[in-house]
Image (spheres, rainbow, N blue to C red):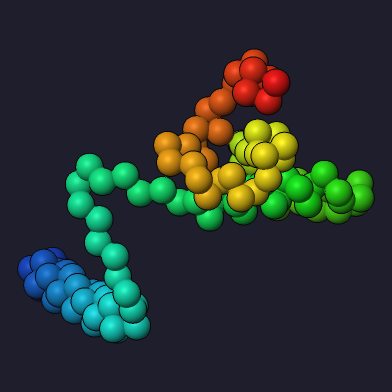
Length: 128
């Protein structure tokens, strides 16, 4: 019995090494398959600023939907998004509602995170 246990303990590192290489091989195959499916890959360099305007537009329309929703729909919307996302989306709507959604496309330095970090006092100054 002890010889069998010792044999298993001795072969354990070899089995672990083989399993590790099998997992790496499977991951590489999966990555290659996924890379073949991806079209138009855009590569960004270090230090480049990437603006995701669609996030602001989506937040704007989500808040607009929330404003026009019934109480039952509002509850469903609130359950689907986090509190932080909801508040930031409301800030996006409050700022851009008087200007229109088209104004979002002309922003250059504003990101969704900017609105997430925006305090209510600062928001009131922006809206007024």
